[in-house]
Length: 233
Ligand code: PEP
Image 1 (cartoon, protein in one colour):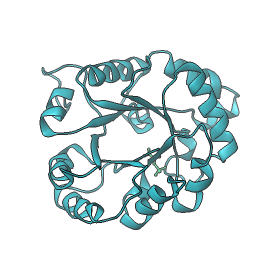
Image 2 (cartoon, rainbow, N blue to C red):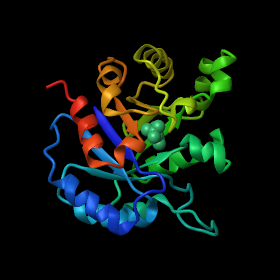
Image 3 (spheres, rainbow, N blue to C red):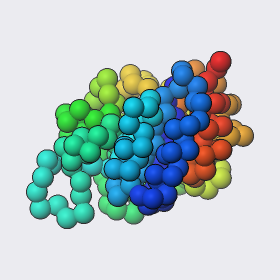
């Protein structure tokens, strides 16, 4: 089971440092892998505070080139140098607001894996696509550019459930995860308004291998509660 906290554009270096100091002192279940994904500027303080713990630090994106004239981008090699363990790619907010495409997601994923990072690659349909009965074809298209890898995890994140308070039912998540797993044999996280109250039901599904958590990962209590819900023990 993997629980990843996506902080999005929250928590600068000082706030990240304080949060990680508190997180370090929490007794998290041993059978749950826990990672936090701070903004780029806060990665270093998170890595420093969490060094020597089992809690991993992931970035929220990474470029496919090692270096070059790509203003505003950060490479996998740079993340590795910082002690970052992995990265999210293809989050729907990047697809929606920053022109991320299936092709750029594929390039970012391949480069990050090649550089030795773990990757959480995000897929998911919009509300309009679901209403039009296109969920399966959208997922298949988004996944068609990716290849299974020991260090690759997919996050199924229905766009209509992200940051909206609307969560997929466990049944609906189950269906979507089965589609993902029929294309790529890798662990699949659910993401979309996961909260302490709904985490157990979602994570109890055999095809749900963890969660990518946005809003509820920003507060220690709710993040800890979700990590606990991920542990059957
Ligand atoms: C996310 O950022 O990946 C996410 C799922 O956000 P939230 O939990 O806030 O819906």
